Length: 315
Image (cartoon, rainbow, N blue to C red; front, side, top):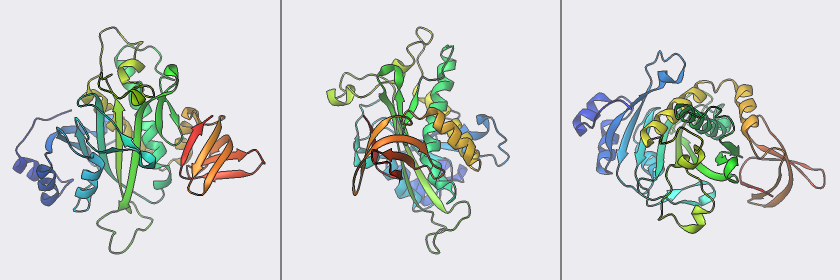
């Protein structure tokens, strides 16, 4: 990451991705501008000069909640919040995210998305995390990083070599952008603002609760085959993730490429699953992910279900 800590006045005057009111709101919440990550480093043309502005707080309730509150004022794609510890971290299906200070990468990214991108956005974020893990694995001397991580529908990041324990979780929350709140969303880019939360276990903590420790795996453990003594820092992992995220979002118009990449990484496909929905449970075989990102499940009676939300349990 480029840049040093600066005064709040410098932060406000030098950034175009947040209003003065939003910057002061972040300051009041304990955030300071940590640095920037250039999206152009992701391997595509960056003619617009897009960069991620990373703001850091030592501790907060929830980076997603903080970013969502600031986005109501004004924000633009590329605003990132990170913290050393969340007191009220959240995951999918109203689960809590438990961390210990300094042991995890805890981030939230704001991005303007179109209505056409929205259905596949959670899948793209999962792919970006997987891409980033492979990138840092190569930098740590892993000869073949493919297969280190896989995805459980829609975007839990699991490590197959560790009994499919969970490395990272993702929570995407979407609201109309300030520019479209009055008139309603349309099909143009920027119709929605997405707050993309991602938490990744970096180091094993002795203070990790037993029920969490039994289901979790850390990046250190996942990269056990790397060069002895190598360890990925939080900043290195964050930079790799942001570059990968920019790459995936840049390619969002190619839906077939996204779906092809996702199907190749999805552990859920071909498995027997039990799917919890608001109206009941569906059990059967997960056979596909459709064009809208829904999990396609054939139940025991031969009926096909396209499941857009809920929780798929591998059985």
